[in-house]
Image 1: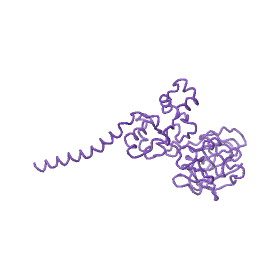
Image 2: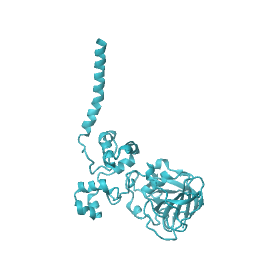
Image 3: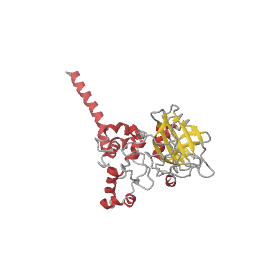
Length: 324
């Protein structure tokens, strides 16, 4: 009997010890709102913390969508783990959102909470922007690009030789029949083949068709190639290095980029549009606006989401042809 009482006392102490940190965690989070606040950027959170997104991916819909799922994690765990809720506390610019999308403002007015509610329930999936320079890193289905198979566009039907690529990524808005778009290139073992047209600043990615050649368009993206005095070299090259983890790469002009892949010695890479400082979430607006024109120091710049997709899709050894 005495031993039985000791066991009961030991169990009670153990249960109490386990409950204390849980109670403290709830107390620490009590000040946080129950629903997603304006200052929480679920897109940023899911992209910066892929471990969280991957853990919650199967239950996102059950939790009411991406924002609810990411906020649930942050409120209950992330805040105690020191994770950041957003890159900038003012990332959602209600005035910009209302002015840019008058169809939304006509219904919701200028109330920041109502506009934010529209953004997280509809606007993000429509790829509307929450501020003037925001670059989406999540696709229309709420999936961070490069983290799940659905982020990779399904191959399109074979495009006839000499016709422009049909965009499945960043819209090219280019219907010029002279866009460089070869087909029938023999497969070298890589699932993809990259073609960059310097004249129209379009980057097309082909995959292997039924005939065993690179004949099916996967994705077409606006890019920026080298400006005057800094031309992007022409020819056929091979992707030979992915920068570690797709992380920050210092540029010759003092800016920073992410999702880098080297294709030629001398510093020539595919990479994202540039950021003013290492660690910034939003890239330099002028560089985003320059996509589709000659603006780089010789590298091939892509939007952040397109650079992320390319980095995760193509392996080392992938052929790159730069023409035009």
